[in-house]
Length: 262
Image (cartoon, rainbow, N blue to C red; front, side):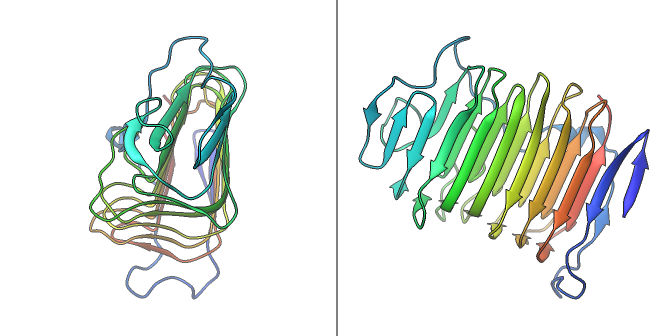
């Protein structure tokens, strides 16, 4: 199904027929409310211009950080920004022209307050989740954003590949935002995404962004008024392509995909 908006397309690929939840049928909605273009979770993290992410060679029992690469295994995070409480900080930030890389080891879980990563330079982010990223029940983090996984970049490509993202506390499961520059968002989730009180997945960009691609498995956001997938673009040139390969369960819309040029 394709809906032309201006001279570009928001392309929506439905899940397999018959897989939609009986509690919340998959609904396709294209909205134009400019007020919703603001990211529900504040994802920006300040970083000094030109600064590297972290000092090279620092090794932690839970995560290894070398230059602009963060490698995590089983970790319970605290709602703080590095270097307040290493090795358990939730949020990391930098301003570099190459991608900040986040890797979650196979079969491991980052719990507690989830993770947030921001690159205020033009290099983007590259996230590979071979485990699970989650927020525990009762937690409501704010460092670097409020989602179980909060990603933001001021250009470059935000790339996510991999496993489950779960918010059992307050907030969305997964927020990805381009905040400036020429950049895109490319999300490919093979496992489930769920939020107890918030949205499942939100994506936002700016007028200079170059496109959004989202591919998912099952996504659940059953709280009243919440969407499973909410992708909104202000790009003057880019398209939105969303493919749902699993059930979308929501308290509001299963899928929102809209282009409102900025």
